[in-house]
Image (cartoon, rainbow, N blue to C red; front, side, top):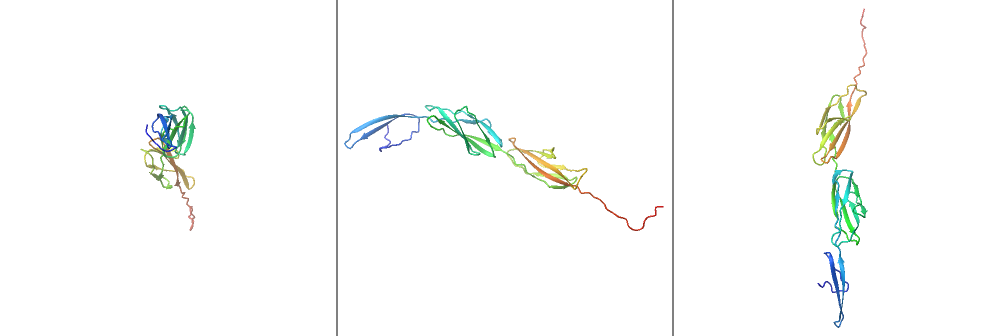
Length: 239
């Protein structure tokens, strides 16, 4: 074999699994030698395999994972599995490929579930990563908060989200439009008091079916004209 070290305490990194023979040759000052050999076994690392039942959803998003990790070549039997979730940096350790792994992801964006398989000898796999994408649209619109009776609401929609957005507008919980912007006449036929509140709601859904809702109160001004008058001057002769 190759001479890798002339020192008393050598070190060497094996990059390939298999059986190897280490030979130590010792020489003294007069040229006498002694030789000893030792066989070592370099194990294959485990191969981590992690998959998700669903990888795209709405926050909070519960994901169930399947562990299909294997021991390959001359590797030792698998002993444990540590899975870390990047949305909150928590981890869970299981001891069998059949043990359930699940996590509820919160927030929006792309997160990762990362699993490392460990065999009985302590050898670790390359981390297995599964990306999890969570979306949530943001509903937003502008509208005057005070209108006169029989005016028309003109709501300007500036909602944002992933993919093509869909909309549904409600006035006092009654659906009236699926257009991007809302326009509807608002009327109080028998007003009581000086104003009447209406609730305008917008539900936005993104391409993944995730939704957000925004409600705003619109006050319809309903003043009352109450005349007050008195008579003065000569009294008419009604006879």
